Length: 483
Image (tube, rainbow, N blue to C red; front, side, top):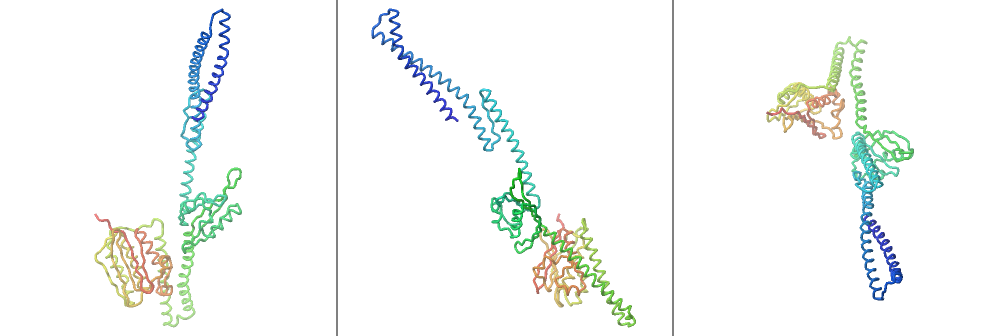
């Protein structure tokens, strides 16, 4: 803008100087004629010397006056140009800042009313744009917060197939980074093939679409409820598609556990009920007349009814523990005393298999727990260790502690557990060796009860096992706080 004002000033001065030059030439040509006519009309004697002297004086004065006039005109022109151009320059700079997105810029131009009005209009526009920008930033922040905290994976793909929006849940789920995704075509991201096919389907049909998809990531099967829909802008302009993925893996797993639980309960109940019913019918058909057979059948009925009672009691116990708000009576408790009582309860079963305990207790540890529930935990673990161990082996019991927990280890020399089965051993009715555990009279609910009781104590469980060598289960219960 300064160059323009300089050019305008220079142009004005050239025009003015040209006018003065032409005027000076005209006056210079006409003055000798008028001067000679003046001398002749007034009969004033003159010679060439006098004429040239007067003429030279005239040109000198004329030149001085024209220079002074030119300087005054240039000064006035400079002030006029500055007063007209500088406000426009200021307004132009403000408009450029607004075009760059700096909506805090303001014009401070002074001058004629038309420029003041232009300045006011520019400032009003700036304030309006600033308010719009603030509103847009607030809405964008809300949208970003919503997308990042919606709990489901989300990806928005433009009409050309390039990713425009993606949230953290999507990136975490497919182990991608923002730089690897933003602006890239969705086919280059390495997504599972069935996800790519789903996106292609939404692109082709331009209709909302919902589907449950099974995805394999790192040899793990995940289940996704995927919803896709086209994104339509103003005037029906198609902008792309948005894909939302809900992880329903846990729901599918729980549903499968529920189905297995119902099936297992039905099976576990049917077995003793069938035995009781069958032997009862045999007795009613006349077998009761044979005293030896009568006693044998009554013994079987008694055992099966005990097994049925144990199963029902364990189911009721598990249901009670799993209820929301279930708590235990947590008080300072000696792990050594609890373990001794658990050993007393399980010793008869140990003697039946000619097994023995090996106790490794350096010193007693006091934890915050419910003694009765802790006895139930360790009794279940020791009974399991005895059940799954061969005769003439040893059950090792250890008491340790770290900075946070008192630790009890129950280690056997039994059949062990395969690594693939370790995550499932605390499920209801899950059995590592189904034939042996069912013959032992177990209900398959003991470890599920143990898991819930440990969680009620705010403790932890850890299992280490090797097939054919044995299993070590560690129970960690929070320590009593030291004064």
